Image (cartoon, rainbow, N blue to C red; front, side, top):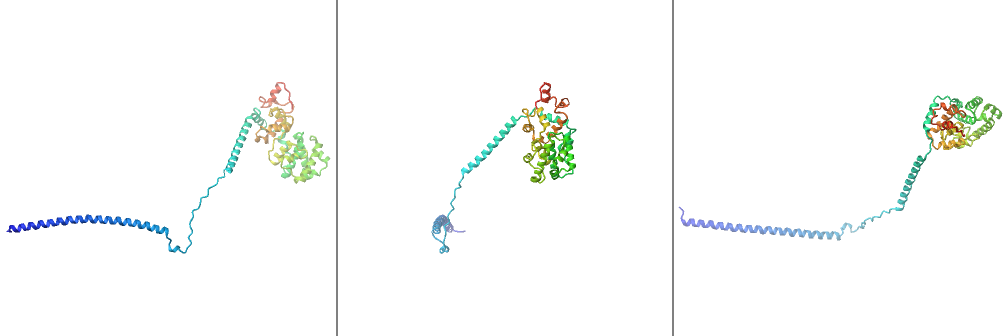
Amino acid sequence: MLSSNYIIDYRHDIIFILFRILIYTTLYNNFYKMSKKLKLNDALITSRSLRSENKDHNKDISTTTSKYFNDKVVKKIEKKKRTPVKIKYEEMENITDSKINKIENLQEDTIKEDINVINKWEPSNWETIVENIKEMRKYKTAPVDEMGCHKCTDPKATAKVARYQSLIALMLSSQTKDQVTHAAMQRLITYGCTPEIIAGTPDDTLGKLIYPVGFWKRKVEYIKKTTTILIDKYDSDIPKTLKELCQLSGVGPKMAHICMQIAWGEVSGIGVDTHVHRICNRLGWVKKPTKTPEDTRIAVEEWLPRNLWSEINYLLVGFGQEICLPRFPKCDECLNKDICPFTKNTKNGMKEKI
């Protein structure tokens, strides 16, 4: 067994050791805390020094030049100045004004057209009357259907000669029935109806060929003069314009309009002869009674749609030859008897003024 003294010494050593451990532990902890504080301060000092060094470095960069550029001429880059855009207000105003003027002009034209449409005069029932005339003409039994000027040319002739023959037929048709005109043209074609042959034909021979057309002696002079002009000025052809046709001897507006349609296939106006002139006045197709065919043409063209101009002469001429005769018209056979102003006036005892 251990002695009591030994035990006491042992305990004393243990207490001493524990005391030393406690002291060392306390010192270590204090030292560790101190070292952490010192490291943090060093870091702060280092970052501050770095920032200050960077500032100094930037200053050096901005104030110093690289050795590479010592011998070079460095051009200072200047910013381009912005040039202000000049707006030409006057030109824009002019453009705007011109556009506005055009719009205003278009509006005025439209308004005028609307007013013209509103104020446009046209005879009553004219469309019904036209349809009824077409119905009465559907069998094409009138003289104009078989012996009109469009039927007077030689089918074997060239286009140029056929145009010349159409013009001669129209010149002969004035104040002459279609049957007489057609017969005279057949004699001329048999004789030789070309510009060169007619120009060399004696006047008395030509007169015998066209007789008995109305005013045959005067027409001989017209035909010879016109033929000479066609040879000299138009290479034996006929003019292509209405104005030039009307300048020929013995050619009036009615002949010129019909010739433009037959010879050239162009509708320049309505051909108004005695039949068309008479019927348009009877039907009330003119605002007021007209005295001449030309006055009638102008009056009818003001309201009749242009798409009917080419056929209205043909319709009315045949209608005038068979139904609406100059004397003793066959009103009882007419499909327009209930709406025709002439029929009403005749029943009321009014006389025709044409």
